[in-house]
Image (tube, rainbow, N blue to C red; front, side):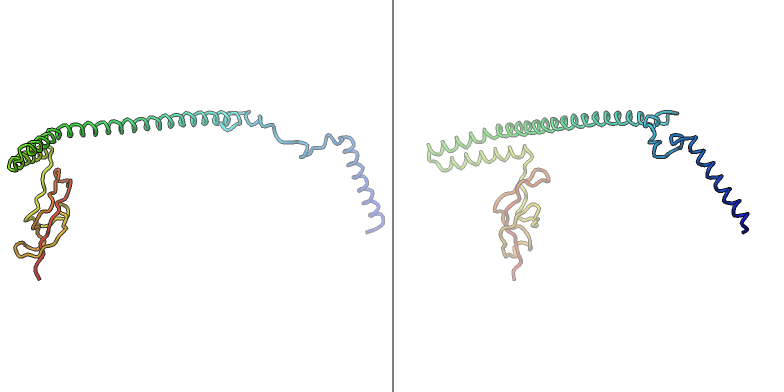
Length: 211
């Protein structure tokens, strides 16, 4: 590059620098845009413009409404819980009342049988007659059996029946050829049932085959 060209380039650079300095001096530092000085946008500006349901005011309203519904549902739950506790208590009281009433009715019907036992014993102590005592006890037994039958309580058949663990409780084994194996040969204690429900199984002796 020639000396004349170098001088021209230097002159142009100085001219551009002078123009830039003059522009900055005219505008001043306050006229220069700055990202740091602009600051964040005003939050209230989000609520301006078309309503879209997502502004701060809208979100606050939705939050207050949600809290109100949550409180109402919680109060309703507590009321339902208290109502259920009261219902459960009343139901248990009613069941207990029914049970006591049923027991009272049953006991009242048993009392005449107890009275007859007492009369039979008093008579036996007075007369010292064995036959009268046996006759009195036999009559009371029949009265008791009639009472049980009216209540739906019936004896379980045992002797001569095939052993059934649902109805019989085998406490002894007996070797015999008189009965088939696994047959009840003797009833040691009578069992009772109400319909198909066993109140007490029969205590029995069961036949086994001879060796």
